[in-house]
Length: 326
Image (cartoon, rainbow, N blue to C red):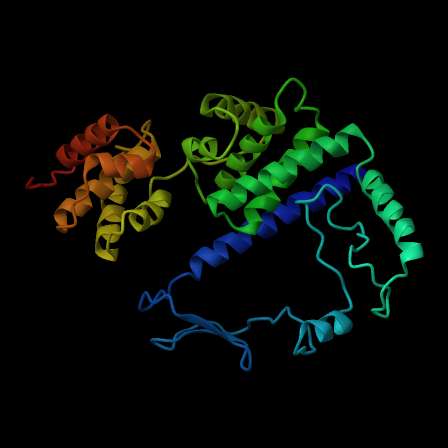
């Protein structure tokens, strides 16, 4: 019963993190004027657009402390709680650490006679924190996930979801016979799909020590054995990021979204790679608005070949009857 309850709590945590990601994405731009200048008015508890004054949320709860601190010393003294529980550490961030400052509770320096004793305490504490092979495995895997999340510029919520997925894989003994790095990379890819912040296998493989083919194979194995139900990635989810990387205007982005929506209505996207379709739509939109980018440049950003961009471009332009002047 205790194990089932723990699993239920973990899945609730995943759902909460997904809602946070969706809320952050939804509140990124003002729905009225499209401005990114959104501020939180703490006095009124409202989330407001600075340009048009639209109130996006009128019951915003301040989750911060009720006290104020004007320096780090005051903050440390007035704080009544430690860091929140996180799945990104093998011990969930609940263990204590003996500081290397060599100072006691009152801020006085520890005598030279007692420093050797504290040094031995620190050494034994490190050994106790990681006591068995399972914890060593988890520690290494979570540090690998943290490294890849940082390199890819992903939010903290993705790291939490990936950590939970890896923990579940470890509990079900799915790591046996597979590299820790491979399962960590596959867990991160699954977390990106879960939170609808897609990253291609090429992007994950670029910052991992494992090849793309191995990551894909391990990912398919995890979702099959763990029963993860992940929806297919829509090309629309790549548009804003690819346009930003190509320095294209908002008009080009809107046109690319319009092209993909029409393609989805006519079922032209089925069976096609979402990154390739998104790249082709962006290429067409950039030509129509006079901000042309080469097929090679678009293909590099999307992580696909020029042939793929060319084929998808021809299909979309012919079947959607888009006239393009080259």
